Length: 67
Image (cartoon, rainbow, N blue to C red; front, side, top):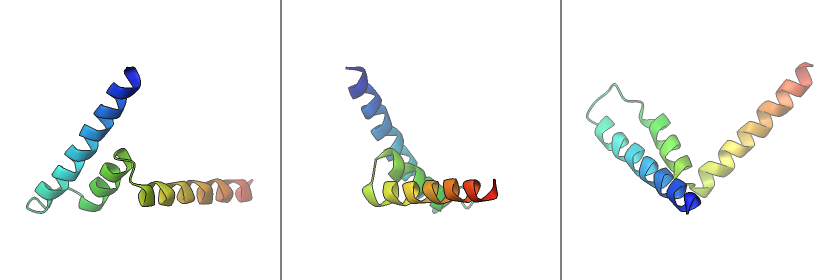
């Protein structure tokens, strides 16, 4: 039951962020790309999720090289 509620909240938050992007087309203050990525991550859009995982791996490898 709690997992369903959490999933529902994630979906609603993702949709709200995507709607903010649409509003951001008219308000130059909002950062469109960041909101799109955040919204798609919350909606668990596969290409964005894979992209973020690759970025995490890349940064982990960089931090290991510096030590």
